[in-house]
Image (cartoon, rainbow, N blue to C red; front, side, top):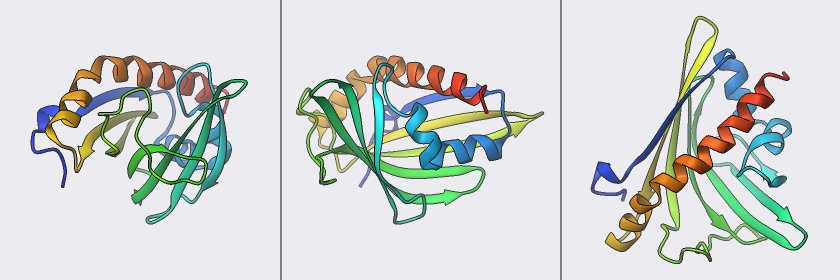
Length: 167
């Protein structure tokens, strides 16, 4: 079950100066993800990454000594080079889903659909995030978080854009 109200969806679109194949690969391969995924100011440790339908991306975001936060993707669909669909959420060190400690009414799972479209060597990425199996309070929390998500994803994709320029 997804959110009954599509107005709850968070959508961000960015255009990168790189071909679709490179964008897709750098969004799914471990060597790339550890260089750019996550909020600005953190480092990423990839614990496990199986970029295939049914696979898992389990990672640790390190914000400083003793400040670790874990996340996990469950990949649903990967169509190279145009589509990546995964369920994302917070996790513990073993990869079990947990509530986000700083916002206990945040949805436990969010379905993310990334689409990539190339035009003249540039790739436009659209990310659509939808709360899964969320109750009304979780949906309201998610919608209230859109501005924060815009900043967080925006900063992450700024880092990503800089990283892409090095490839």
